[in-house]
Length: 383
Image 1 (cartoon, rainbow, N blue to C red):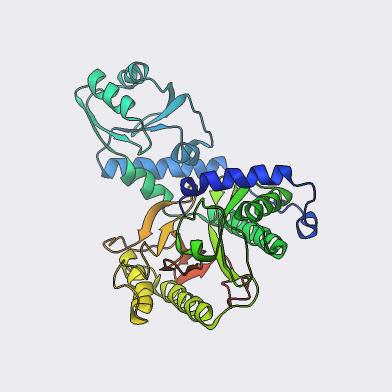
Image 2: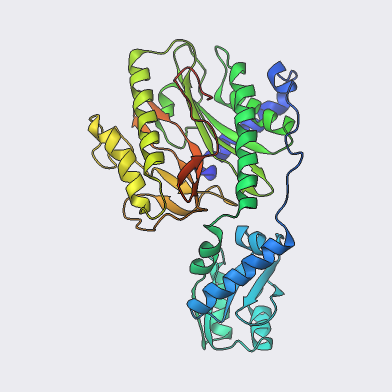
């Protein structure tokens, strides 16, 4: 999900956590889960730089320019808010102040005043505008073929970090869901999840939604109090060495209805269909089509209409919770080993409820594998 969309809810959850005088027993029992975590090595970062140079040569870029963000961290292991990083196709990378005039001089010092410069997608417009005025003979293009070309394919070390983040998130959810009680607010449940992440040694948050508001894919700031029979949806995750998890569980507080179970079961079949379709060589849009067919064949939709599945079936994940590329109609990118995605078809029925099951997967030579065990049943959120 989009973290910005529930920032207000998450902040309210943190405030609620600070007001709590008693941490639930299931959360007090947690122990840190970060022992043995292996950060990305300098050798791996150097290999990333060499791959980037190869992609730059293929795209005929003289250099790429990155300001602070996940791509800078990916290549350098650093996050420098006031600095930028230049990787030339030839020669050593250099740091520079994130200022167009000073950066332009850096390019002149490198002998790069003409040719093609790749700008990473988070570069500010003011930087771009300043550079094109300072260096009018230097063409600017998107550096995404280089940055995404490197970051989309995860190494074994990256997959191990993603695995730990997913394991930690499941542990937090398992500890927090038993704290549900009649009258609990969504902020209180979110605060308990945040407390569980802290107890496990990480920082994380989760959106909690109850009842009819579960139909809103990114939640609602409307006040909610938990009642018997409410659908309950929790969504988000944590970070381990910068690598993100993103997991959603949907269950019912108390006894579920036949209607709730039928829709939950349909959602699980759609998630299974996406998992089965995600294989090397398959276009990303085919994974979305496989999940969507299950839902439309049951009478929802069609297409992206509601009631039904109104958004993509999954997104890339790594150092960002949402990164390249997506399981969505029109995306003909071929799936490759090392790619990582969320698998989260959602059934939205406004005015009634929604169901989303989200687990992340990674692609192997033989197909997709989940980082986490899928929910086996509406009243069993964890495998």
